[in-house]
Image (cartoon, rainbow, N blue to C red; front, side, top):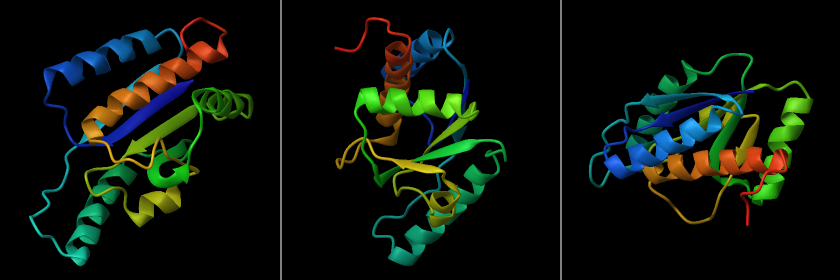
Length: 159
């Protein structure tokens, strides 16, 4: 299985980079992982709703350039479906069985994802109704993908 993370924003914190590197290394035995970091657009303080929509649109255009036609796109969105770790594992497994072997997980910038990305998404996933920094969320997503593969293989990890 090929998994691509397309993320808006660069990771600056060493501890987050270390965690991302660790889960990327762990995932090598289960899938081919590619992480694409895109630059976020600067959001002025007190940006208007129109400005925010335009910023999300620009980020979305940049994301779309990296989505290939054969990718099954999972957008991380607060309005998406929430799954348990076991359900997430089953979902990834079912996609593979159905021939969807190129998954793209999209993490937007601080304002979220543009409507264009949400429209392109094949599935919308929500981890929580809470808001997380997108840098930290990348670690959380990688951990859940790793956990999902461990569950699929019946390997000890999820407790």
